[in-house]
Length: 178
Image (cartoon, rainbow, N blue to C red; front, side, top):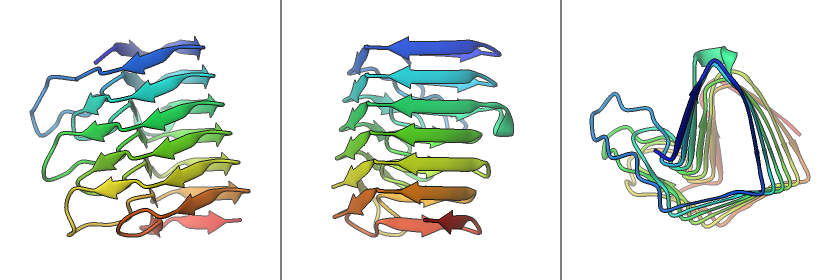
């Protein structure tokens, strides 16, 4: 994992996270390949996440701590990130268990095994505005949604979610408002 933070305020601007590997193969490994945040307030701007390899949640970024983490991502690109777990991987680019606001971002060619080839959004509230989610995939055909998977409330505005291999969007008890 390139960066870990707990109970912190984190600001990342104009950074590139490339080719990070979390190196932990245990089933309970929730760490993202590039970044893992627990109970944090995270702001990421103008950054690139590519070729990162996470554990079972978040190829690039994983937030944990249930509803206590807040993730804001603006003007950033996520390309070719993936999770390494073969049975429970979620969020090829981002796994967010708290709340999120993602604006003007591109998610392309990210992958995982279980849910959300690009994004797996937890039980919080999530705002997706002007994002592009294309060409993401699952490495197993047994599971759901290569584009965006959510079990929270998601607000979509001016988004392109298309050409994801086994489905663009899936909600598991969540709500989608556009």
